[in-house]
Image 1: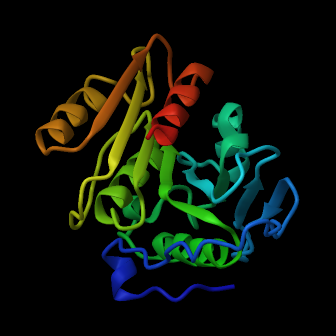
Image 2: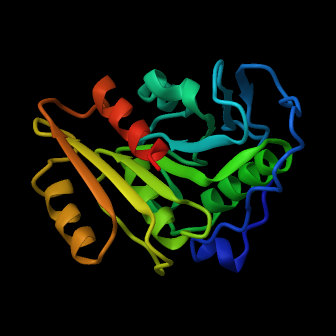
Amino acid sequence: MEQTVTADHAAGIIAARPGPAPEPGARWPLPPGQYPLGLGGGRDGLLRVPAAAAPGPLPLIVMLHGATGDAARALRRIAPIADAALVVLPDSLGRSWDILDAGYGPDVARIDAALARVFAAWPVDPRRVAIAGFSDGASYALSLALMNRDLFTHALAFSPGFVAPTRLEGRPRLFLSHGTRDRVLNIDVCSRRLVPKLRQSGYPLIYREFEGGHEVPEDIAVTALAFLMAN
């Protein structure tokens, strides 16, 4: 299923929004498990329905893979926290996300289409809609969050390299982490430069460094989830 790329998508803007609260006792559309996202093509993505979650609307995490990755690998990165939220895992059309190729557009359209389908079917808590990512996916998640605060309340960025918004909208809450021995995206030229600039710009931000490489340790994932779930 091909998604139409609009001028808004080229500007990094996502139109989908959570729907109204469901009736008390309403059943979930699907039982716990993993399902194709339904975007079509050779690269699709996954919807991961939690095995256990608190009653009521679900927190939602859009989790973006790193370069050359896919939805399954992205899900493994956050496996320790996946049962706390409905997780949307789109695949990029190319080896990485569109901003690293020709600019925003095709992948934004796919994320928008995926979220429109999920929001139409699932009870999502509008106070806890996070976009997350690892490596290139973390950079892309941060960038989309800064442009779409009316949708994304939080961004969870694991080992980001950069941020490249075309516009700024509001101030989402940001969580960043990075390994001090990262040999793929060096912490000194990535997060240690990025975090001070974001703080100077007034974004609510938590930053965690850890002794390790290009990875998402379990305790970092758990800390990111606590950040999302905090009142």
